[in-house]
Image (cartoon, rainbow, N blue to C red):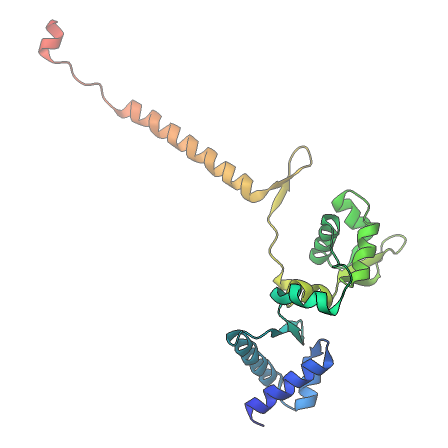
Length: 220
């Protein structure tokens, strides 16, 4: 089957499904290899970008979905949904970030990191479908654990959790406060430079011999 025909079929499948479609489903429908699916969709993504289309194909783990471009959201939302836009508070975003970087974390562990109750934030994130229950743990009382969903990846534009930005290194000081490693390293480097400069000045002062006095200056 020619390439343009395959592209048309994939576009039709993704448009009709209205949800993430797995690679396995596309392979069974088109009867081509996984590598061919990936190459064709990559080519379609490039074409959509070059043609300044209002839609794009995104990858969520091993699934593909046809979506409108994120920067056009403000034009689409008032037409499709008259409800208020769902907004996440800073507390909810903090909770979501903790869960994203710590899959299968319990509510008690979230609260230990944030220092405040996380009940309201967890319920709100569950309501929006950004997190889900990941099963009970082996801890005393068998508390429920949580993890992010494919909806979280789709909303924030990630293919997988491996795409999350790398967290900065940190240390705890004597007051049990978080101190960023990079800042510590920079401060230590500055101190070393200052010490080296002071040592260089001292060495220069010691090695410089005094200027000999001229005969006229001795008589004076």
